[in-house]
Image 1 (cartoon, rainbow, N blue to C red):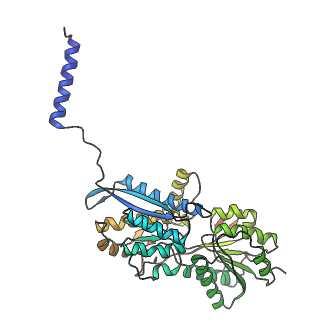
Image 2: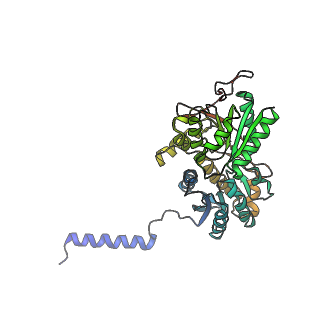
Image 3: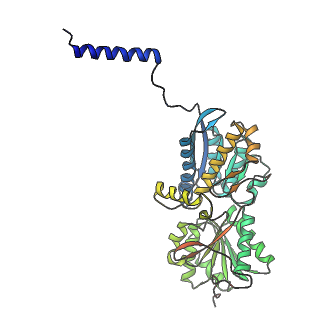
Length: 397
């Protein structure tokens, strides 16, 4: 015999079923109708893996932010996905990786990292009409007349020129030794620096070369020491600059080591140890803390990854965001409409007010100079004209 409680339970079940029949199931959360794949490549293994992981962190932060916002393209909600590959800082592997990413159906590319990898890979993306945004600073990257190549920081010519002016005008140095690692990046930056200091009537007393795998520079430094330079410029990466700084100290070369943004890293400080003190590096961009959203980004990065930004993470973040902004404005991912919008984009990024010239190079790129003080990279203000900077030291005897 059915109890009153049983009848009430039965009636409640029937009522719930009728409600579902007439009204349907509760509305599901809106689902993305399309997945947009963004390609990414950098060295994720090997001596330069610390750069690559930092780059990937920045790109993934942007992807996650876009998905959290719920971006619509042509009225439809889309989901963003980062397709990451390890190019091992190798030009041959980079070309293979580029083709793999194109075959995977990416709609845009952020990377590669090394200029020597980015330049040969860029043709693969150009042939597929896939926009490519890179931090690679060798000038030839955006001088190939591809419609798909874009750079999000100042190039080697601008950075080498700025460093050369700083060394000769702010530091008032006249005698330099120049070393580069024979990579497209290192050689390009060293050549630009050399042209600038020679134009300022300074002298290159020694020009030397190494490679991006070397860690022992004692023979080169001993040869340089005999020429009594007032500073050494190195075009290369922190994994070489760190040991070079230590070996300079061992040999009594108490003079500044100057380099580009690949030296302006926490890795350099770690590898050089106390010998890092006083050395100088530039960055082809504004100091992050000077940008409106720079401090907030650095804090978010620190909280998420439990470490400080290596250097390039905000540039890769901006690259993804610029692509998303261009796609949103174009209302499509089709290259015929997307590429012209990207060429004319105006985007307030973490690193800069981003816009491109006709070749795809960043317009109005800022440059900053840093010096190691107290074990940290500290932004420098040039001394007044005519006053020699305290950053200089007496050349070795």
